Length: 239
Ligand SMILES: Nc1cc(-c2ccc3ccn(Cc4ccccn4)c3c2)[nH]n1
Image 1 (cartoon, rainbow, N blue to C red):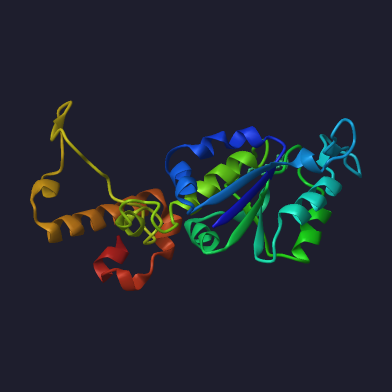
Image 2: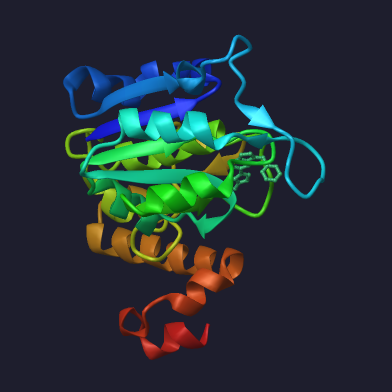
């Protein structure tokens, strides 16, 4: 997968040299390039922002640098991903959708956002996805891109050693995952549930599923409401 990131703070992405994303870049699974938006400014001050038409607080990112950046970095198969407080909520399903694409271009806004005409003009020539990480406001899109890119990269073939993790983790099967334990068996007078040491894999699977359903019901009633009824026995649904 080819990924291009455009930002006025390219150094924000230094962490992407680390850990599993770094490994995905080394193995070629992820072909990642980070670009400084100011590359496409031509004034002596390398200006990327200006005051908002209609007044109001803060500054808005000028369209010209963005237009030239997207011309340079885009490709016929590119999808533009724009983190934004007004975007569609980003979900695991969204991560799967983006992970299946050939080329992602991430536009990191700052200030009060990017001139709307940049998004509108881009949408005339490529798919555009405005995504929100949640109902809170960040300083800009960089942190959101790191989160989105991590969620996507985990799904790329060969990145996660144990591909089984992807089927059992939270949000994969529509439920939150069960609690996990490791050695020691007793820690500060707290024991590992006996069932997990029973060796009875059927019983362990049922315990984990019950725990997943209980967690989802008590912590995420919104997810529980969407959980497919065909996966539930009648007695479980009434819970
Ligand atoms: N889930 C999210 C996404 C963001 C986000 C993404 C990109 C930008 C570019 C600028 N800002 C700051 C800002 C402040 C005021 C109004 C609009 N935007 C961003 C915030 N915040 N929370």
